[in-house]
Length: 334
Ligand SMILES: NC(=O)c1ccc[n+]([C@@H]2O[C@H](COP(=O)([O-])OP(=O)(O)OC[C@H]3O[C@@H](n4cnc5c(N)ncnc54)[C@H](O)[C@@H]3O)[C@@H](O)[C@H]2O)c1
Image (cartoon, rainbow, N blue to C red):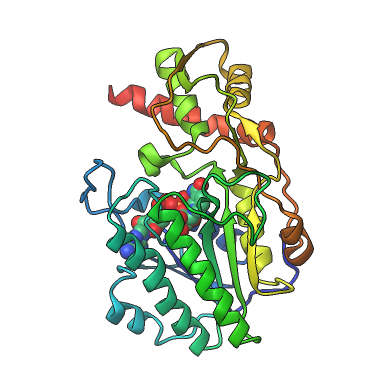
């Protein structure tokens, strides 16, 4: 699926492979390219928390239940561990490991983890002739007017978005100096779908609203639910990553559905599946809040052959059974 080449004998490293997107990629390769050798590296969760109460790393072993490849527990900030890992050559590196929590204020840690360690891993990958596909973010655009286009309005509002923009800026100059390098940065928009549960409070609005609706017969939205986001289903994110292996051109690409949808649209589709529930509109306490994100995916279509397959409705339709299962599990624990 998505690429024609056989990956038989190819070695693939997925950093952050115990997280939402990384583990989904690991299972994609296991299912569709069983002869590829997949290695996952992740720090996993330790119970350590940020001042917000959110965990410092969100990887969970349960995301990897059934995964048959090699699992390495290591911190990407540990240079010795990374050098040891890269004693072998990886043909492809999917770099997903990051502090993915956009509310983290520790700028030193976010920059070191998201940017500096990425650059080290990139160097190790390229030294051995490997190809790099890494996770950037729509957070690089901050609150710039939509549609969001690569190279325009890149003005992050938090250190997370800044760290991702620094990754992109660094690779822009590395690509300029090394035309043969295969480096593809993917700016994911709001990703949702199976395996995101362990992200807790940082999981998508689709999961949060679905669970609120089932637990309380009511959801809360900032007035009046018309804020728009580009919600992209996890399987489209997998498609973009896999197609990036055969990108026609190194560079940075948006990965969204290409369409902005509002929170009321999520509520509408959830009601279709769960029946009626109340919506309480509350004041938005944030002075900064993104009111409209929308990925311009023209370059992704042209150079990655990326073609999103799932509308918001189709994504929720596929995801709803898992949301119901999570709810049932939570009910049992109450
Ligand atoms: N999910 C989204 O909506 C979204 C949007 C834009 C960008 N992204 C980016 O995509 C990537 C994957 O995101 P995700 O949603 O799967 O998040 P996630 O938090 O579920 O996955 C990140 C993984 O990285 C691991 N990790 C964190 N710090 C580490 C370290 N120092 N060493 C080793 N492993 C470490 C975590 O344990 C976790 O398993 C991240 O880079 C994120 O910034 C995600």
